[in-house]
Image 1 (spheres, rainbow over the protein chains, first blue to last red):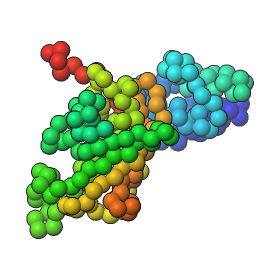
Image 2: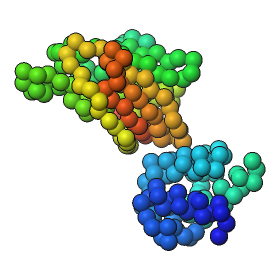
Image 3: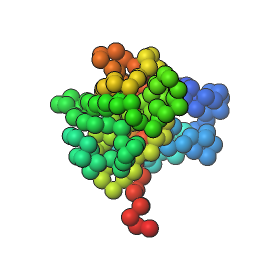
Image 4: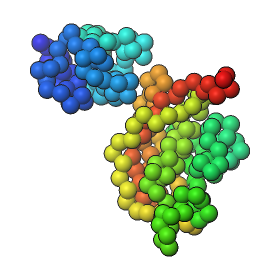
Length: 80
Length: 143
């Protein structure tokens, strides 16, 4: 697991008040982690601040799993 | 923007329209005022002989003040609270006070808006907090 994924996992766990071990790539943000739409937007804001990136709303809205988020963050951090 | 102009954007009406005037400055900070006359319904019984504006009403004043930050998206929509975070009440608000709110948009994605707001009287902070809202279609005229 990359450093980026480590950091993202810690943030997701903190936001969702879960153990880091529960945050695995296949987990669905809404169905498995219990996020609601506000959690999702707050998570997006936290990740953008942590990684100093600005996601496209469409791409972010299409992220359904933890793995999708990792991919998106890695894509955007490579851009910057 | 006076009360009549505010009504073009906010669906709230008396006795729950809790902003008298609003402006948006060049830094996209919303400023609003509301004068507590002492005749408001929420002061009846809160508290007998010691009227104090309830904290939830102060949160509602802050929420309505945030509306200006999303006014371009408000037409045909209703604003619903989705969360209130980090709210702190520092001083009480009483009849005769003119409440002033400063609000900024912290983050926006799709129909969710996250704002921070500070409510004060005479320069003294009374409440601060982070408020979030969802804009949902206003279906009232379609039924």
